[in-house]
Image 1 (cartoon, rainbow, N blue to C red):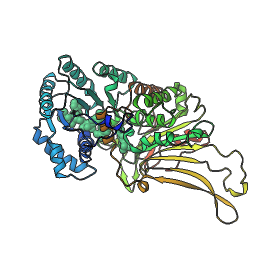
Image 2: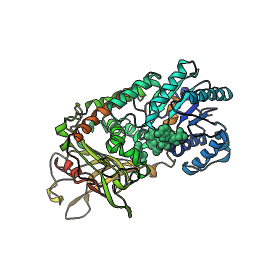
Image 3: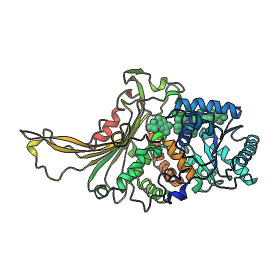
Image 4: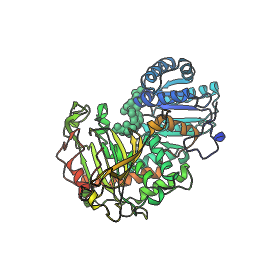
Length: 511
Ligand code: NDP
Ligand code: BG6
């Protein structure tokens, strides 16, 4: 087996080869395991990146045998893997999959699981290293952690390392996030806790750090002196699908802004870290979140916008209103669109607005970070422009789709009379790299196996992000109920979102 570096391994490659271990997946009968985790693990097996003798012990309440679960796993991998099944690789991968059943907070089920775990560890010589993966609804997180603590107190912990991956959402507000952090820390050290934000596993998101800090030309202009404003958009054309009942208790702010968009903001705005490792990078990210100016209730109306989609047309298809989706109660006030204008009280970003927006059933799927620069100081080309102003230089980082980076600048149109037009320098991943990128889950699982937490969120980051969101939620709850729906599916959100940015004399980018 070739030793592989973790995504941002600080250690020499030879030190970072993953150890044999057992991954224990709680919630193994669920959607995440079927669509993301098993396909990711299988693709890692296909690339021969998994540690030797890796074992996967799956656990859920559904009663299955090892064989029945392996059959089920194969069907799911066939359906969801980014590459087809290679029968030889599958056979050796599947031989390492085991199944045990029981309730998530049920001591009897956990005793059975521990017994099975011991057998698997002995049979496959995994050295007692364990990676627990909580792929279950968040209501069951604490019950599982308590049972893991009970096993540890009874001396049934592994002899090697034990780490835990916790899925999102990490809490529904600051108090619940703190409670979950307390529960997790009663059993695991923070260094062994891997909170998933799958955006951090995306290649284009990791590239933000490389783009900013591996190139000398960016940092000198990446600040309030040159940047006019920043826009971060995560737009989705899909609705809530079959997740209506989860989503209705969440909404766009909790589902996307608190986690994914706050992570993008941190990476774009952070200071250069001392090193590319979990501690240094996350120290800088959390400083950004702590620098966000917190809203008072009476500021929320002017600095935020929210909405919910009504019926409409997306990509030529007629789609229902949010409140008609499965699992959504009529009269729901849950927002499917949210926009915020934030300021960071830091030396680098003082006075620079960050406009953030996300929504479901918007015209297209597009995640982009756009850094808009201040205009040239003197307008020498009066006669060249048709508009009363020059178009700004914009650096746009396309996270997905059409992954790439482009810089818009003005150029002279050949011929006369003299005219100028914006042009773009464009970098496209697809045109520059042949290899298919690994999925976010492949990257993140591999990093957790190697003990590299750089791409996972730390307890203080999660709490800082909730502190920001709580002020928005508090402002919204003090405002009169909205007249909903307030945007048509297939449009760019409610009028209030345009008003939010237009009050500052700016506009959302057309994507
Ligand atoms: P599921 O709803 O599919 O639940 C996973 C398993 O948990 C189910 O198969 C079921 O197994 C058990 N379960 C379901 N509901 C309950 C309940 N109320 N009480 C106890 N057990 C229950 O969840 P997902 O797989 O979709 O998600 C798992 C985690 O991953 C969640 O935290 C989710 O937020 C997160 N996530 C999921 C994504 C996805 O695309 N699915 C994307 C991003 C994050 P059994 O009955 O056999 O025990
Ligand atoms: C999840 C949200 O975390 O991210 C979903 O719960 C959302 O509502 C999804 O659709 C978006 O992820 P991606 O990778 O498709 O942009």
